[in-house]
Length: 165
Image (cartoon, rainbow, N blue to C red; front, side):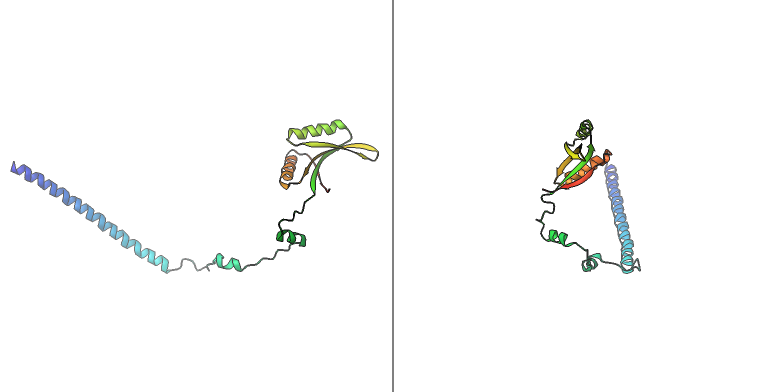
């Protein structure tokens, strides 16, 4: 029985010895890897990779000044943003002009299908009555742009005019 216990304890000693050698091997290899990497880093930083000049944009660009010619009216608007250059002006889009009321009404219906609210204005031109289909007035450039794009997408020709009060 004494031999079984001594054989069992030798197995534990042998196992711990192998485990210690394995840990020592790992530490040794880790140190070799660190030693091999360290010289590579120092050689890269000590020698310049490119012979090209380096440009630092943050130091160069603030010194650059570009003069853009601006009209006097625009300069006043920039200096005083409360100026509304289109105050009192409204843009109207004329989509068609017809002698027949039914043709004008048909164009108005076509625009209604696109989600646009049109009006028919009647005017006397050279002793005959013409019926104009108009959209607007638009005081907001965003709505005007969306309407113009919608008309262009649907291949509807229009004339833009400015109404002044």
